[in-house]
Length: 90
Image (cartoon, rainbow, N blue to C red):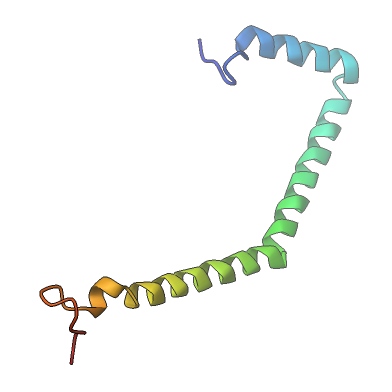
């Protein structure tokens, strides 16, 4: 049997569906699902259009730039391994 959340199996899902049908009735469930879908869609578009996503991308690109600059300043690359007291290129 397929288990969804570890403890939530087929019989549990059937019981939950029956309880929901008894509480709300057959006519209310499509309206509730439509409202829930509309809310999720609005939330998704609001998060995609938000400045937060753009800010996160900007921060990620700045971190990548800093990482590249830090790799250029690696002290192991700046000295001669054979003669550590002599800087490279001089």
